Image (cartoon, rainbow, N blue to C red):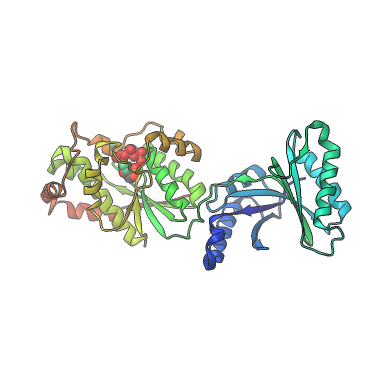
Length: 394
Ligand code: ATP
Ligand code: MG
């Protein structure tokens, strides 16, 4: 039987009290948007739960993939439905369900029937035993056995006007539905860390935009493509991402020509942050996000991070801050960005990087160096923001 109904499980949004409906509404909206290109789907809230019904032919694997990548969902249960259920119809369908949904039967199980429609003539407990007995008769020889305390598989049968049968939970990513926690601008580069950081903040329900600092001809079109590919992968979870592509070359050259070379990375980062903050203001975003992690490179010592932060007044979130590289790699593999991140590319920071960059900068020292830019940098900065290109990644 082709699955036409899914029961959607969600954890955290269930405990949000009054806000619960708002969260559920947004989750339904996200699901509708994700499934729309695949066919006709109805996403509905019923009995305090969310159901997805397919009303047309669709690609099962792709639909499941999309649902299991939607933040806010902890699990997806493919459901068999029985119209106008009778005890006999359920006997037959549960047996057929087991036959089609499982290939081997060497596991323990338990049937849990919930009779909500009291016109159904057999009580829940009686029905538990009846359906359990049918399955044992068929599959006991192949290893199937009952375990009422910790079964490997729980077979749920819910009897309403329609009956639902399900036993499988395909895990979702958890988190909160995107759109429930404001908007952020993420500094997205072609590396491993920033796509992970973007994903982590989106997971908490934040709508993400991204900014990429492009330095042609020092960085190639391929580097830009790579960033877009990464953003697209993250958008499978986070929803459409508005990417701002800022031409950073002139800013970088001005900094290179006027500031001490051992401070270049710090000063460049400060300008990236300033541009990102300006974009955040224009886009009504509440913060900026980066993939930095303490001590990973010289520009990410505590001192450097502190000085970079002082370039802006908006909050800066760095979800990878306390993670080891391997931990970040593990997440990037899990979410599918790793293979793209390791594609070779030129990083705009590494091209202008000094042999011995400062690791203990002070704000005074950096601000003093930046004074050399006064009168030169302002029009370049304005131009960089005004000429930013926008691409929607989805
Ligand atoms: P990543 O793996 O995310 O590229 P990284 O380890 O290479 O990070 P840096 O190059 O120092 O570290 O960059 C630190 C952070 O600054 C990145 O995670 C990203 O958020 C931001 N960043 C760096 N370069 C760019 C760029 N060209 N465009 C946008 N953001 C950038
Ligand atoms: Mg990088």
